[in-house]
Length: 562
Image 1 (cartoon, rainbow, N blue to C red):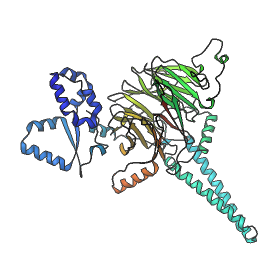
Image 2: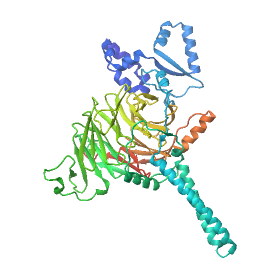
Image 3: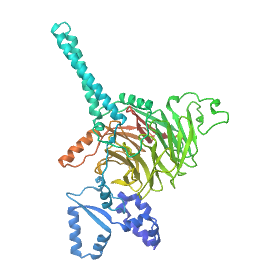
Image 4: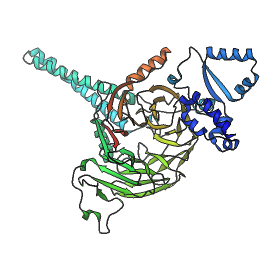
């Protein structure tokens, strides 16, 4: 039986290698009927119909052939195991069709049924950004009133004739200020025009000093577009010897964390890089604590804070929105909460049964979401040791998780090649995005909450419309895994970091406008335009972060030596 199974597999493997290489690796071990019963993928294939996309011409040729030859056996197999999706027009290349790859064994009808549910993709009511917009509009009104009064004064002075030249200069300056104000409004319009929604979770109260700090950052935010690209600060981990599994950067770029294979978590304070390490007197009377600040080997100039507590490799670490807390997840199936001020472990969250691949704080803090090898995503709050919600539905590992900007939804990317959107209140899957050809490794939400970007193992990035559940545009440019994605604060740019040692910037704002025009005209979708590729020579890019002031921070690991 085994030789016949192997011969059959290798004979037809080439036909499916391009689209389903990872599934073929799993199916290579099926050599007997017993293996079929044990493997969930094989059971799913047998229970659901396989979807094949054909153009009308190819479909008609197939039907004519089957009718002429009276191939009843083939007709029976088709009726029982295959669903044809006939598309109008000419046939397209399989590599260019983003919708051709359905999840193996999953009915397309299920995705259509899920995607009919309603999604409220707007921003939260009475957010800090909304209050900032109101303050700016009020200041604009007062400035406009002041300008009107100035112009009246200038008219009176112009009759005197002596100071006419000076008044013209002032009018030109006022026009220039007004023009820059209009430019700022046009850049933030993507966020300002988004609808407002009510939160489904009880949101924490924001301290006054934190709100003032955010408002200050918003006032000093750089406006980015396809002509004004961000400044990039790249942090490189040297000599990690393949021990660095993950890294993350705080929202202001002042702290960088790394999760390592030896179960340790290390935090670097960028303001203290290059300063001499603290003396041993800072360790206390009882010796080093869990959060002891120690120096790196050999140099002694750079210092970091060491957090120890996990009993396995650390696969994810992330800062809270205000940088006062840190979350880490590990192969020991736990999530740990650390205080960056106390340098100590506060809570150990246990709930997953297998390694936790990713953990992310919500945009308001307090709540966080985790993704695991046990095929579930879970929502937690800092004050409870048990999860609030369990999201189950993926057919393989949940590799990454990301919060929606209004905190009412989370998105998950999986090794089953799909992305799902979940309602945090009900735990129900309300969107299923099909199109990736390999495992999904990274996710990012647009600032207005309408769009989502996802990156996979093959280097493909797909941009999705949450309201319709459709792919807006594929972004092709990377040649290896896309490990990180980040939208700029006003949503005009998308940054992607990859294992191909590049950071790429994509034009989102102008491209989405063009796509909307194409949709109204009934045209085909175009791919988003890449603005710039920033190579790092030989450093894979682990993480990206736009600060509140729109500065782009990135981090990667370069291993020198063995």
